[in-house]
Length: 228
Image (cartoon, rainbow, N blue to C red; front, side, top):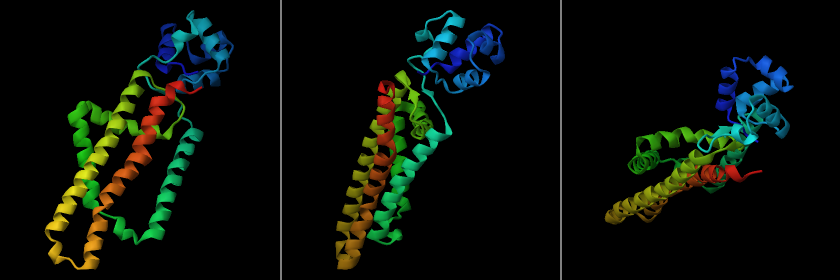
């Protein structure tokens, strides 16, 4: 169960108690109190002990419907990092066996996609939404959280950004194809094929970012409140 860390700290300070005093009143250890106030994760027994001391129901101590409460632990963060490394390794292996690395590097496509993504985000969700999407990227490094309305908002935002990414990639592909076809007489067969392959890089970048970052994030935020 996740409790509201801000509510717990406020309740304790209103009583003028230190964590040591609260530990004695609840019968919990000081380390347990510190851990609960840090990450909000508490067992049913600890929740009942705190609720009893504060004369509240356990439900009133839970994270509110708008807060995102997260259990930031080294183990959870490392699991997410390992997952990202596995995805990167799988993609890297395909690139290694596919073609030279320089064929996959296109700074112009990358910059265009990022600019298009956050411009579309700002138009749709406003400047605040754009900054929330940037700060929300940190949630990919955790899996133990309670989200409520804020998580639902971010999940919808990231789902929209997936569409923006593929939309930007489509625009890049069309513009690139028009440029290639309008100058087709200047290409030899090999250089034409190479130009076409480079033109596909923008779609690769969009897929990597969307499926490797935004989609996992949107699913994680959408389902965080229904996990046991």
